[in-house]
Length: 528
Image 1 (cartoon, rainbow, N blue to C red):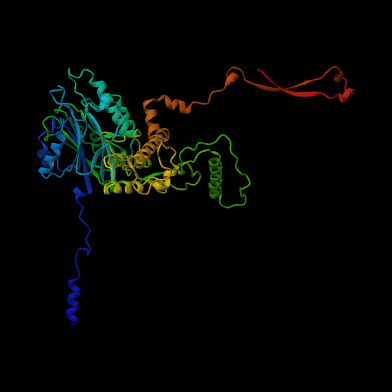
Image 2: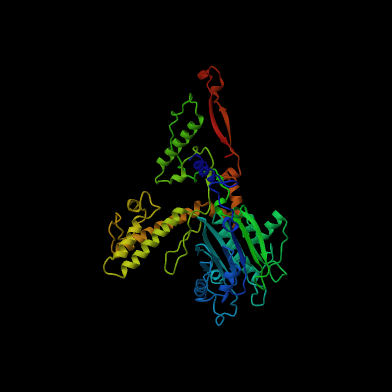
């Protein structure tokens, strides 16, 4: 029996191996690939892309030549070939060659992860040029914002190609570099040499770097030509958040005949180093006059930090009580921050691009409150359209109204928040209905909330740090106006006021015994 027990215990001992061995590192799992290429037309090449570029996770593609339903047919080809790429987002469709002789256009993004286009406020001619688009991709629960471009080539068909390419790159830089946060990239074929346009300075000023230049600085890899082995006109600029995760850079010259494939290998976004920030409150509209009780200070206290926070709390409370309107909690909290806070960019889901006839946002910065309110407006708009086509309320209308009542972004919930809505159109109810309302009532609620969203967008555009940074990039004179001292008012520009004491006396006052020798002293301003 003792021998049997000893044999069983000995058989359980493993030599040179842990009882619970950890997973073996797999580069394909621990990293992801982001890159760009120009296929000179993507029609009929779905199977080739799936076989030759399946190692990539996110591809920014220039010159796809897709018009009409070509993008839908390409997605069907990917599904039929059992491709690992599940998502394809394309920009504005290219005009058919019968309509426009310059049909070598089009941009798109191919991804293994959920990808969609973002709304932009560009000029109509730039959107319809089919040469630029902004997308976002959800990877490791982080939204990666990217801009894809395809510049006009140097040709007699494009006499103003440099001006148009500058416009494309400048608008993309404004949208991606300044109005978004978190991991970002700008990639594509610009048909321009590096640093040949002023817009390159905006990209570099925002901290973006090209993949090949990063590889040269980090590992000494030579910069290669990407266009017909002669020039370098394909770029992939990445933000500092992605540059911190870069592991390798590869330039593949044998995939496409005219352009090389530029790709970067990155560690997973879950391994990104934390960014520590010092939280500061938003500006508070201080009233012109307000009173603060000065008897609260305890001189004998041993906690000056607590006293300082208490002082600012009393000042803010007194200022808020003197204002005729309520302020946000983000505008309060001075003197109470004692440590840095971990910030993670790219966690806020951006607003989807509006479909035809859908509510279009005018604010394109990062704001979770704005994103939630826009979604609620679109829910109400969808409910109005559904109810207007039916005489009675069906099950789908009940589900839509339930989603409206449970919507996030309203404190404490939408039904409680509705009576406090500052905008109310004709026919809007005083209280939010519990049951699905008729079409006219829902239409009035939709219009009221749409007005509130427009008001919120104006306030965000004034207070947003992203918009403030963008205004100073587009107009450097704003920086000088920020640091300019307040000018003197009125005649003080020409005359410096002085105050002196003038002593005068009458002839009777000259005798020291008369009237007690009293003299009169008055102050008169001189120089006025």
